[in-house]
Image 1 (cartoon, protein in one colour):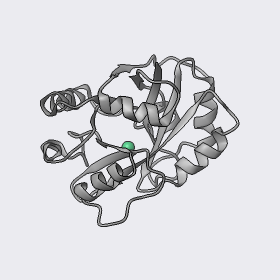
Image 2: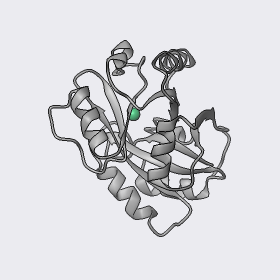
Image 3: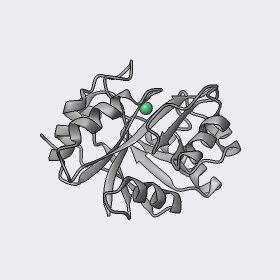
Length: 201
Ligand SMILES: [Zn+2]
């Protein structure tokens, strides 16, 4: 079993300030979160940087991802190392992701830039039901959506500042392998939880 933070921004997102080195150092030092997805806005440059910095360490895992600003709202795709071709409609993004054996997640569906109920129209693999910077109320709405759509729920801190890292986690019944983690999320063998806020590094 591994615990992962599946939604993290770096300085490669225009609205975020977390240095890739900080992420690697804190992940390495973290007592139980050992996998992360780097999901910068519309770019994988941050992912490539973090992966390179993390490469000397064997017991942490960096999952490639992007948070795409689609025409209808934000979609997180995991397992994809380059941005998809445009136009960025939800259909195109989801089809591209499936071709690459990745997974597509409706990000914070009921917050600003979320898809809201429109998410029901698309073939998602999972719903982000616990977002570290969303209110409990909108997270609850996302949990209901996952139930209605009969999809797994995942969690990510959506950290844009270093003090927002590691607030929540997704527990996956998989080993430390990208392929296994993504397949297991698709199967729904996942749980989400709040991490302790008082971890000092
Ligand atoms: Zn985000």
